Image (tube, rainbow, N blue to C red; front, side):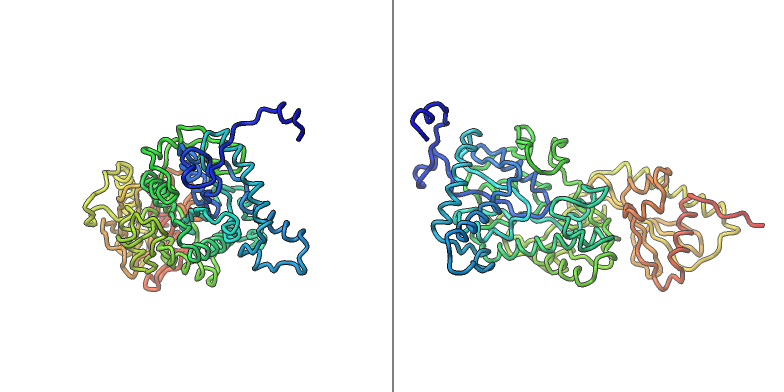
Length: 492
């Protein structure tokens, strides 16, 4: 650039820190914070929390991690090696010093301008699917701090379907959907498994550079989760960051969670929605892989009874008390018993189950109790003369829709036509129907068809026990009648 042209453009004054002593007052370009995660796992919320920090700047998704690695790889290719670099060499960041210097020069220049414009000192990056190149990126920026953000597989799948109601696409889902035509749930499960495995592999190989964060902890207590992340990144804690992150402005010129722009607070309401995802559509080999990964992360595994669980009983992770608040990844429990305990600790236990902190009363469940009891008792008494006597029973389970730990259970004896309130839902002859209070109320009020609610997973039913002696279609007919949604023909 000529002297004339250099003076005609007003360039911002940029101070690039060259050592630890200077970093307090200048830009820190060699210690980025990079989020590794899969889609629909809370990365945009985490981006908001990071970006609200006075020192950190986290733009929308840029894909610069992948771009930087590709630039270094291209430099190596054009530099004239005798042989093309092996794919594993590139994945591990086997780049010559000149290639690394070129890639860093590009990124440093861009982020120096960006940070100065934002009035921040350190940059962060949040892009999906970067775990596969994280090793190579660390070779270029050895001081990178990686935040590995995980979410339970089934909740991620439920969120993915919700985000793409007219056809699953985007977010990196497309190749998986193409490979699983007609089975979007299996496609998203496969996507989660691949990305989670890549993240865990990198985390296990680089424990000093990684911090494991669970989405469920992030939304349950954003202040505590953010404090761990800030401590890991080496920046001060910020009080009330969970509120502040929605009060400050964030750039919108890039991909991200479409819902967050209409959000004013952190909510845990989406935790546990994965119980609606039908387990039966997931191929057994894939489910085995998923459960192995879930176990490593301390999550509840997915089995035959998954769809009969209350949404609030899963799937928060369990970690031993010694690992709570640790700066590193921590050692996950990875056992079935631990996962079951996690459900209780996460606020999904039933009311009166011995929890030292009983949940607040739930008026919706109280109202549902009155309505459902009256509806079933009326139906049974109206058609007592022509009601066929059947062996077995149906157990109706309703859990709170507002995040409290309340649950109500009703037991209908099909042979006697008697409805009772009882907590024992493990009877061998019981057919279980479960859903939250809003789903039950919508069905009883005729706002949604029972079949639609079952198909969507808003109400879930277990398999008909062999001891019941009934076919599933017969049980559905009885259920429809019992809830007063149709009428048996009069005896004639």
